[in-house]
Image (cartoon, rainbow, N blue to C red):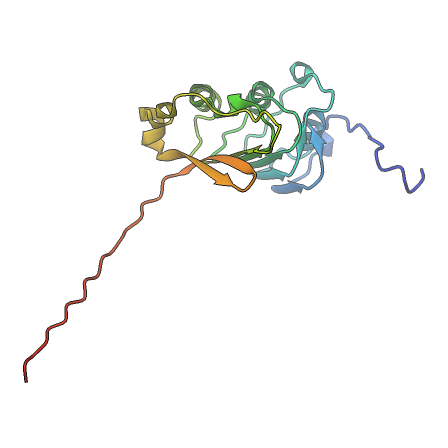
Length: 203
């Protein structure tokens, strides 16, 4: 193997009972396809926290990926930089078989379905019923001569009883050449107004 062979892929088989590890925290800081991720995590059944910086769907038929059971996984953090539709993401979550309490998702994929409140509600109720904290960020470029997908859905979808009970809000921010949609916990802000009273005493 030459030193410049940087794109070589080695397939990792699914682990057997004799090959498991006791790793509880795992960070993957390179692009990882779904089948590779599931094969890798088959060696870590005791995994509690998983973070990977780039999830890809590199020529992978998600329907052919076997589900993985990570019963101890409670915290999941994902960044998606390439073409992964929200539909594929939903299948990925469905195949995890975990009781997630915390989900952080950042995506640069311009699939407007990521901003469909009804689809998120259905996914959370059916596949993420233990979820307590949800941190989501979706970025889209705003540049000249580029048709940026804009969310045209009803904003009041995100103020239904489902979202209000969990105190999750949709926030929209314009940042230079980007429009950023985020779903985050509502934070109470206490504002204290201090009035200064000056009394002038006549001498």
